[in-house]
Amino acid sequence: MSNTNKPWGGRFTEATDAFVEAFTASVGFDQRMYAQDIRGSIAHATMLAKVGVLTAAETDSIIQGLQTIEQEIEAGQFQWQVSLEDVHMNIESRLTALIGDAGKKLHTGRSRNDQVATDMRLYLRDELDEIMAQLRRLQTAILDLAESHVDTIMPGFTHLQVAQPISFGHHMLAWCEMLQRDAERFIDGRKRVNILPLGAAALAGTTYPIDRHYTAKLLDFDGVAANSLDAVSDRDFIIEFCASASLCMTHLSRFSEELIIWLSQQFSFIEMGDRFCTGSSIMPQKKNPDVPELIRGKSARVQGNLIAMLTLMKAQPLAYNKDNQEDKEPLFDSIDTLKASLRVFADMVPSIQVNKTAMRDAALRGFSTATDLADYLVRKGVAFRDAHEVVGKSVRFAIEQDKDLAELDLVSLQQFSSAIEADVYDVLSLEGSVAARDHVGGTAPKQVRIAIKDFRQRIA
Ligand code: ARG
Image 1 (cartoon, protein in one colour):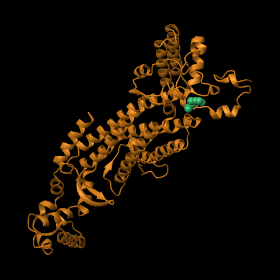
Image 2 (cartoon, protein in one colour; image 1 turned 180 degrees about the horizontal axis):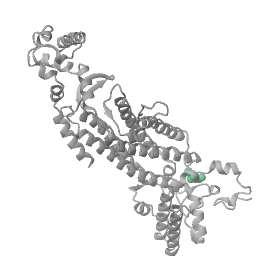
Image 3 (cartoon, rainbow, N blue to C red; image 1 turned 90 degrees about the vertical axis):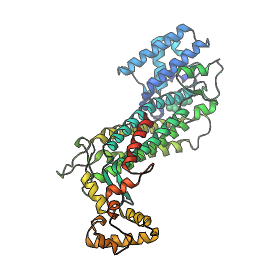
């Protein structure tokens, strides 16, 4: 057997080892970029016709051939061949089989090195649009939940200990803020994705009179890569995406963790639709929060993909090296995992039912208005450190009595400070406590309502 079926077979006398062929092939995973590969090739051929390297007839026949191939792939009729290594050579070889000699001219002034870099950028760009759509859908779902619970009071936590009462809507807005930073990172990274490498050819550029700006325009790129070596070797845009995806998954993982805690019998803060939970094969009573648990788990692989990409690049000399073929699976896995996680999260959030009574009871049990009592004493002229001491003693007394601060009578409270008067009960109530934090970014329902409205405008 010779290597004559390979597009690069000319200088070889010995056939590729069968195992090496399978080992070096990427077609098993890069075929998912077929649409981008075809789009890039059509633009390249169109540009070659414009500058007179191909005739109009050759280009027409190339474009028609590529369109036929796209249909074949979509109909599941395309024969992918491992011996043809990757998506690029599979499509090119089929093109020549379909249209003859014109097909052999498509690769003029191009290399797989700039071709694959172009395909990756087109692919990630398409996926980024999808990811952004899912992200917005999730933010909207969280905002809707926040809006129906502006006045629902829950305990806010630090150290997972009851800290101060907050509006549940306010808590939900915190997640929206995190996702908003994720969205901004994806949008910003897209600027560096959207640069055309094509024209760099193998690494040094090409001797044909190509018009890279024209190709960029045809493919909606914002500009052309300024250095041919950098163009074929740069994978920063993938690392950046993997980093943004990792952080977004970290946010989803933290959110999942809260849902899991809130769903536990000990908290019982929320209920979730049965369709997002599973049972146990042995314990009939169980309803497990598998979806949030799995998202928390999946964040690990997305973080792993970032480290894989950084390590892949760290010792590579210029320009293209075959190592770069290893950029695909981490990227694709991060895209798939993030997209699926966002999607299932956005589906799940509207199924959350809030147990207002459990949240309220938890806020009452935890002396969550103790800070309000201290602030009250300060307003009556007591120094904050002294006020802190007074409240500490009151809390200890309340614990002994098995009561909340608001349940202690005035005489009991006054034994700790004569500054305490009958109006103290206004600040000891949960409603009084949240309403008092009435400034931008605070938890007063009035502020939360404004914040939700503002947020809807920010993402519109
Ligand atoms: N399959 C290759 C990759 O994914 C395409 C580029 C191959 N270029 C080369 N000179 N062998 O990176």
